[in-house]
Length: 41
Image (cartoon, rainbow, N blue to C red):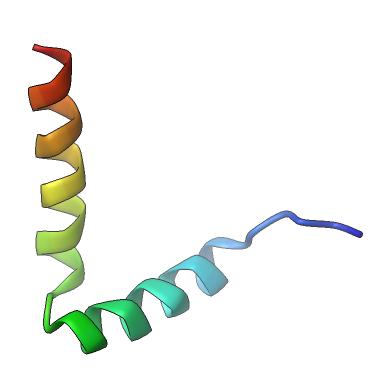
């Protein structure tokens, strides 16, 4: 089985997740990036 995740599929999944959580993709990515950066400091 090939488990490569295509970006379009990932974006679609994130869009569905964001709709359920009431978040916009930009805020979601920013949260992940800022959270990752804060953990490294």
